[in-house]
Length: 74
Picture 1 (cartoon, rainbow, N blue to C red):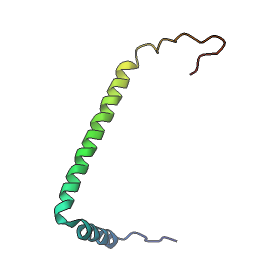
Picture 2 (picture 1 turned 180 degrees about the vertical axis):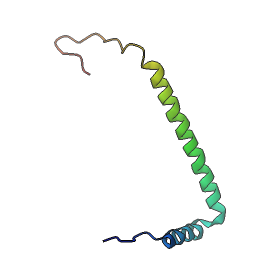
Picture 3 (picture 1 turned 60 degrees about the vertical axis):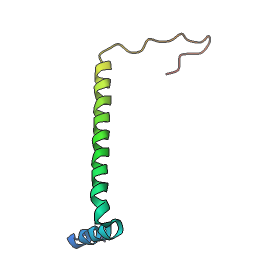
Picture 4 (picture 1 turned 90 degrees about the vertical axis):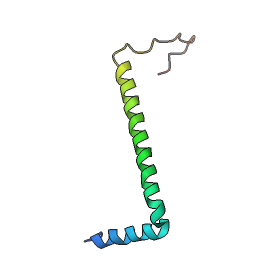
């Protein structure tokens, strides 16, 4: 049904449309800010993973006092 749906010239048309819509001045700025955002996201996920790895060997959280007549909620 979608035989040869995406040809290389389709990508060229999309690139030209982006240049026309956003202008050649704004595209580098947008790419730069996207790169900064991805770098921040990557560093935050790495920090979360490192925090999780540091806390994993420790024992689990201490169970809190159970309320009367109700089992602890997990």
